Length: 382
Ligand SMILES: [Zn+2]
Image 1 (cartoon, rainbow, N blue to C red):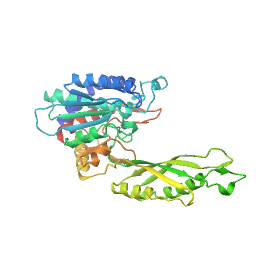
Image 2 (image 1 turned 90 degrees about the horizontal axis):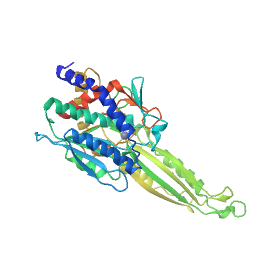
Image 3 (image 1 turned 180 degrees about the vertical axis):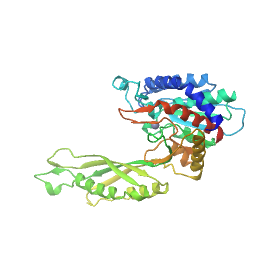
Image 4 (image 1 turned 120 degrees about the horizontal axis):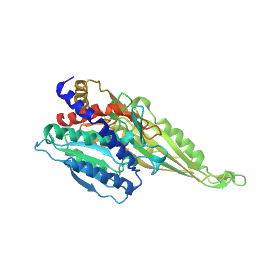
């Protein structure tokens, strides 16, 4: 092990209990995406913690959801800043702690949001603390952005994320790592959603059957077509996840709708799939088909910039005594936006654990010190 990095690892090992206590405090400050008050409370807690570490806090006020938290750490160096990206919100409704209490057991910290991504926020805090302690100041400027709406599509924060990314040398996303090996994410699929609405003609199914035009039958045919757009080899999938239609069993249905989740691996497939979706035509000419929606997040592709960032991280990990793997995943994050702009982005630098969004959500406590040492050193080296 490299002596400087060994020293850093020791620094965080000595602080492991404090790190767990901090993460626990963040988990116990519940922050569901749809509860502005709760998310703002977590924002306040974190504003205090980042200020205490020398950060200048700025809130981006939002009426419809929690405020986004931006923190600037200035430095004497004129290097471009590194952007540490994450989110305040969780998918868990208020009160989840009652059935899923935050607790330490079997070497893990369990609870809602431990993995996704309050441990990631904890790692940001301690990485900054480490750098300040070793250098007396930050070796380069660092910007932290914690958005409040990542779990619900990032509509109100996307512009801020993109503006800050454009000013940065690299983006480190502290979302959960992949698998219990703690792989970082160097590719993520792009995500889109479409709605299909079929309008037919209602009629009594006994008296006037021939006058009816079934929207459900037409929708079923459209679902066959849409599902046929899936191309596993090119990483393109379409999932019709919701269907609705009809009014009563003895009425030929005049309306039916479906919602389709789309995942793409390559940016150029966005236009391709949009064209195919928007050119859907009814097989029964007496029905109408309307298609709305589009791509929400572009794919995060493993560009040369992403690969270089991964190699830097893997080298640091190796000097810390472990092998950092990389993974391509189907889920999207705000890293998709920054990578889509061509800014080198490395995702999945956060906690190691399992069960994100599920009742067994947890992080492995012993992994925290080396993740913190990795993030801190990466901030310095990119
Ligand atoms: Zn997340």
